[in-house]
Image 1 (spheres, rainbow, N blue to C red):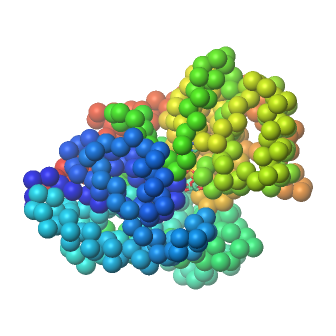
Image 2: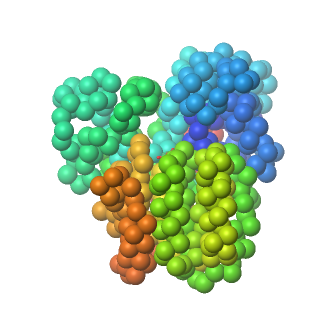
Image 3: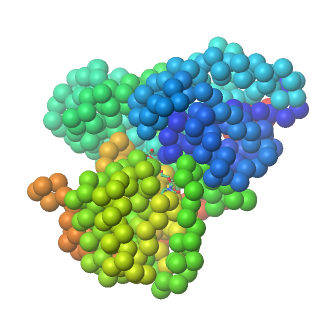
Length: 451
Ligand code: UDX
């Protein structure tokens, strides 16, 4: 072993995976370990333009196997192609790094979805860590897939065979059979794709040297206790680290922070739906009108990749009408927005990263889940932690402006929710400060890599 330990980090090529693994990488670097961060070249390009890099993290682009004109928004095509092309490049990279005795690869870290990297590392005798980026209850469900199949609850493609709730334990919210993390009603191709990937995680979790997760023990001890080998090291936040560094695919519009400075304390509704959710025009209109109806300032993230001509025209008109009362941005510095004293609540799709960030900043949620783990995260937010309320669609499947207006007003006047949110914030902070549960797990992981 050379003088400085060296880890290679390989995220699944999606924003919700790249960003937390980048935060984790910076945390590792801060502890004297060298990090090489691998991503498909089009993501690499985005990272290098949006991110002020610490020199100690080396970003390495890999070809994604697609032709230059191919659609990189087609997640299935991109992922399959990237994962197929990965092993050869990955093996070459490790061999190249290992040529220098000072930097030999000590460990490969992925989020579990990048199985080919784990296979290459295993063959080359390199230690492997999986960092789970969904909540512990979701991981526990994924690890139960073989049993769910054996018990006739789902078939080998993940389709539920019984229309009943799925309980892992009495203390953990049950899953609705149509809202499993891999459910894509009416889209069997996507469901097979997601299910295939999460199913494979089972095997590799058992083979890896460390199973880490972006959560903290006090947040969900009951689900974590179902996975004895797990080491929670979260919440992974920019705020926990020194310096500014991000892993965003889009440039952040930080002008919204000075706009937030001008708003009254606890007044702003922050609406943001992660990196993949999309709206149809009718739903987008209702959301806009709902935000307007509330009569309070709002900050709304509308990603540039969902703005077509019709949306763009609608937003221009809407912007004029609301003037300075609301702000619409392409991409916000989310952690800073949530931490801002003017932010009163978080209208969120309940992706796991957003969930942890909202919790860490003590912000109450208004939940609007779409798919994957988001329904389960919503159940935790509303029913277990009691830090939010859920939006319910009408009989046509639309979340109306009136529903948004009523629920936000209820949320803003609910002192119980605010108190619970502040308690969780304290717990989250404690877990990553010296002698906290996640802090200790992280230190132990680092020590093991170093020796
Ligand atoms: C996806 C899935 O949707 C989610 O359910 C799963 O748990 C992780 O993968 P995504 O939709 O991108 O993730 O949501 P989320 O997990 O919340 O991650 C979004 C990230 O983008 C967060 O870290 C958030 O801070 C960041 N973000 C979002 C910004 O930095 N700026 C924005 O304007 C919006």
